[in-house]
Image (cartoon, rainbow, N blue to C red; front, side, top):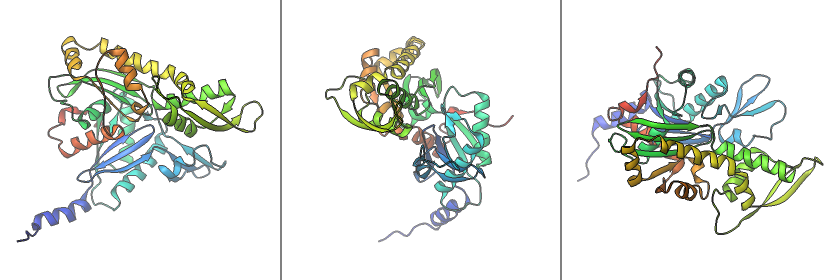
Length: 354
């Protein structure tokens, strides 16, 4: 016999989606992910906005705007309103969040959503207020903040509420977050504003100085993904790169090898390694013993740099694990908090206006 759906369930499905769509948002320097309660991750878009200079109005957001980076005519600007994990352009960021809210909701709702936003653990009170105000102006009813390392730890299933210590390294576009977590709080944390963007910048500078070749941000990112590495790899790779000759001012193509890019990335990578060592030195002995047993978990898009986990393993002599779906860990963790707020009340930052 077929069981008919309960009338209360039908009404909840119909009216629940019309009344409100509470969300969790990983508002990142490079990309923004949105998790909607009951639906999971519904949006993953670059944190880029294209605006018309004359009116200041946005004409594209996300993927469409990213395609315009470095290619716009004088009357259009493609902007990344987030820098180093925090808001650099308040008004443009507000427009971007509003657009992402609309994309995620897909239909109008009667009540504005409650939103959990992931932020760097080293964020200042002024930066917290800027994030909260931007989200409220963009249409959020209530805004809660959660530190990215805790959200990442929840996302990968680490026991954040336990007395046992867990260590997470989250490498995003603008910041690298290194945190030791126990009893629903961050015991020790190191937040440095060196991550994926600085790696791209290092590649860009290396090619300009070594080969007199100017390239754009997107080309630098592609080089990093395709042949970039932090540790010697078994097979050397080569890639053709096109740009503009600094001396002659004409387009030119060159071949570069993976060894060159590893050299270009040496400085930002070494600073990340140094920050990890510093965090370990500051970890209380009891929690350090837990980390020896449990190891360190790496999350974030920047952690996908080839050989970075092997380099950290060699430098720390500790087990290093690369999380599955590294770029989604933070928003998945915030989504779990959104779905079960009573279980994770302690992990939320104070975010209300005084």
